[in-house]
Image 1 (cartoon, rainbow, N blue to C red):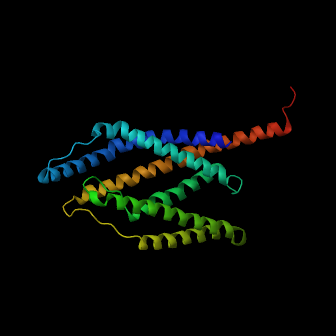
Image 2 (image 1 turned 180 degrees about the horizontal axis):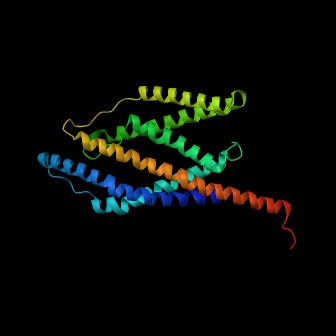
Image 3 (image 1 turned 180 degrees about the vertical axis):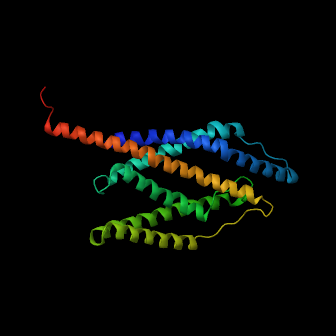
Length: 248
């Protein structure tokens, strides 16, 4: 069953990647092009612009599709492994378990890190600090995931004594408190130029957030349905193997 779940998760990720690519190509890429044009105008005022090793045509077509396909397939595989790990331990249908995993993953790995360190369009941020900013972002992701894991463990341990609803409320409250403390402790980064258009920056942030939402929600819906089918089929096969095939 684990192999079938893994295959279903990765295939679901590839399908979701097509929808995400269409959204990014139609909405997000024009915003990036406008930001690149502004960056090139500033570069021409100071020095001759450098030629990129990969053309923009390749980046916004084959490069974007390849990156999204790899990202979504990997997430689908991770959700499949997560479902296989919690299957039988939670009194929830596979579809509901996938939705729960997708929601908690989105909040811990995307929403909280982006609230602290939102994605930056071209022309925002210094090239000298890109290494530090990348390290801080990944530290934020790992720390947020640890906060979510600790909150989920506490909710799981208290569900039998206090009931599922109270345990979920405690887990949510614990995560909000830990995430708020984490966001306060992590250093702030503000390198947006004063002359950068605020409307363009807002559009980029909205489209970046919507792209991630499409990926995680799409995986939750599509893989959730596929996982339901895989688990039910596995149960039927186990029932046939246990009781034997009746004679005709």
